[in-house]
Image 1: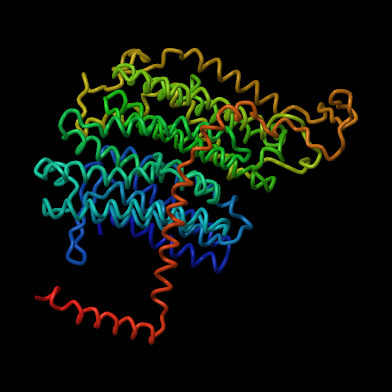
Image 2: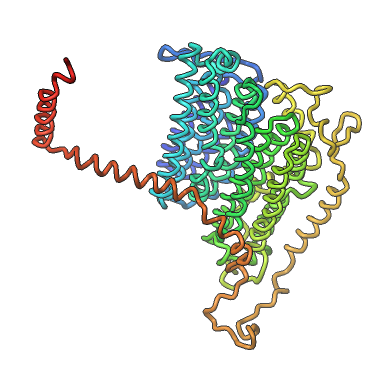
Length: 617
């Protein structure tokens, strides 16, 4: 058995053994889970060579697996998050129900994503895609909350994507006689003109669902916020990137071979820009950290989709850079919310405040990640957004630049709301018992947050694998370095250095000063009561909620309310209700009563006899 097959078998066997071990002993289940994720993940990074190919014959089919420079880049995201989140999940799931089911589906999700990335034929790709969908669906409904509303919606949209992909696979095989990805991409122009449009559109629907591209996004906010927070970092940081991976394959192969004037790229780019702007506005209105980050994730995916759709070397560089960076800062932020939920029992901004001294390491992780998300130098989010704006300007997409810049600027509002809502403000006595999250939860989130600082200061650490990935899919670069297309960087010898490197040095001291502040003594806090507060000369009653976090951005929300009312979700619901009415009518016809069916048969025969001349001549 070759190494790649062995790794996938270890993942699958590890998922089963972990589930069984957790039934015997909780600690044994924890240890088996860590081994089932960390061991094969480590083997994947150290033991799989880029370019190696494995062939497996099963059920008359030839399955081909291998790692390309592009899939290697995405596998770094999957494996990195998998290891850190496995460590994080053990203390997070301590004392929770269905821990064995969580470990089982978590491990299957990691296996399936790596399987997608190594698949070189559509059969393998589709099988692993479905395993990923089912395991993530079971995570969404794991808590048993809003299963009908959230779980079914996710499953229905996933099914739409799966059928779209399956239809494209059948057409490609009927036209070319092959399920190999390379054959379908290299011989794409041999298909008829109709199929050259239909196949990319079907695949983009499938990949657009997973990447939460509007209007296929409506499942994502509920699914992200309803799944356990220890898994949502995988959901947002890695699983959504499988849609981006598929989009890149379609864009750089099929779409690039279409005639000039085809508007598919422009349409996807504008849908991505609208996704970034609209989801940002929805994030601002949320009063729960999980839902805020869920909408924020949808918005951030919009930036990536814009870069992939524009397709210039610099735009693709920005998109792939953001693929990795988004996984880091959004993975860290979902971990932060999970830690707050673990320690306080809630994630509602209106109930919690003043955690900065009680959870200082969690606050530092949140602060670094929020700065990266907002695109402020010297963290890595600034690098990706700058390159994306620059690529759009170079491509004369000025209106799209304005739309994305609006989304980025509006994003500052929910970034502030997140930090202020959880960590700043008055320390309430009812939260005196709150302490810092367990070290197993703090270290992973802090490492991801610090990673955004490292990549923002030394982006060349990520540029080289991205260059290799893009050159593998056909992008040419002067001197073999695509990042030289950006004016943001200067080359000193063999080292790429961000121009505002001085900001990084200053930031180290600033963050150190903040840390010293938040570790200050709690005794300096002065608590006030309603007797110390007046509203227009009136003393508020004890039950009156005066926290600023109620209706946090009410004037802004009133201004955007007409836009937010136009939800495509209600049209989906109306369509679903129509189908439900149709099915109810069908149920009345097919009653299950034998006598009724006998009457139907007699009527059918009578109609045949009556119209036999017209039907049969």
